[in-house]
Image 1 (cartoon, rainbow, N blue to C red):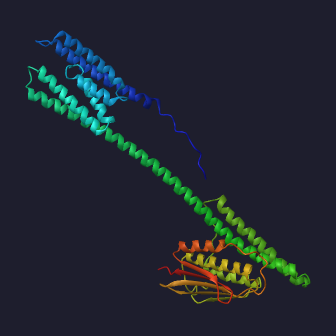
Image 2: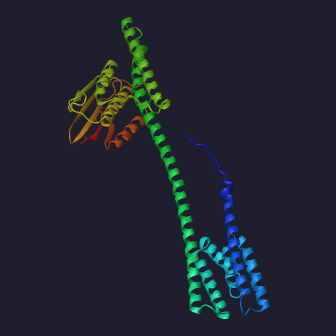
Image 3: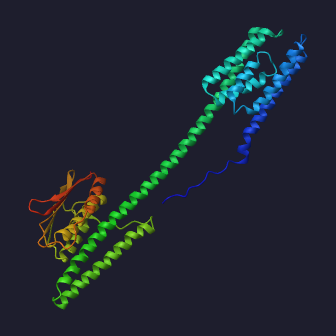
Length: 392
């Protein structure tokens, strides 16, 4: 059944607020690093020129403020802050945070570009104003390792988010696939019920048509014969309604099962056909209807439906024609059911069908890996031949 469309739920307030909380935390960390750099510059024995200190500190302050827009313009802010590191020590913390953001949100190429600019700028700063207490090689190693750690951390977060997004997409795809499978199963169930209704009711109604037609043409028949024919009509109408209730019961209670016929019920089909004045000969050489040989229920039900549909079509399109039913086969070979009717002795009173029943039989046969052939005979009659592999 169609499912109601639902609108996606709004994200929780805590989830929506989390990105801004992270931004504020990173801005606070960058500001703390800037204050540490400011304190170190204040305690330097050889301070930098006043103009450079003012520019350094102003750049550090602007860099911390710029981090508030780091998600919207990650590459632009990353390049600007990395370039500013060539003269500003207080902006270094903000530049590292910007590089971290680029590694998370931007491409590998953009990350490599910003990393190269940042390393070059910091190395240039150390060459212009070297640290008197630390060897230069140690400073350059620290710069390289710091950048490597920052980029690695950012890429790991990026990959984790990509993995989570991929898992969500897979879950959504699996849900859609499950829904499609459920819809497909529902369609197949409807088709199966439709086939059962066609097979069961078509057979019953064809018997009703034969007996009702006999009553219409035998107006001068003795009252006892008319009564017997009317009783047969009444009995088949009752059984048709009972079959219909059983089929509809499956729709009302999907957990129930429709009582399915077996191959032994072919004897009942032949008996009903004979009561409807159809001459039927049954030759069960395989012994399936008598219980001498056993086949799975699905195979036996397929044989039953083929015989049922063939007898129904014979009554519709070849009234009065004798019908021959032959069932042959042996284990580890095949089961063959063949129904042949002679040309009609009278003109059919019912219109020609559209082969819907035979098409349904072909679909049934394919489900058990069998073949179904049908068509006119050389003598003007009709034949239906079913061949099923004998289950091992």
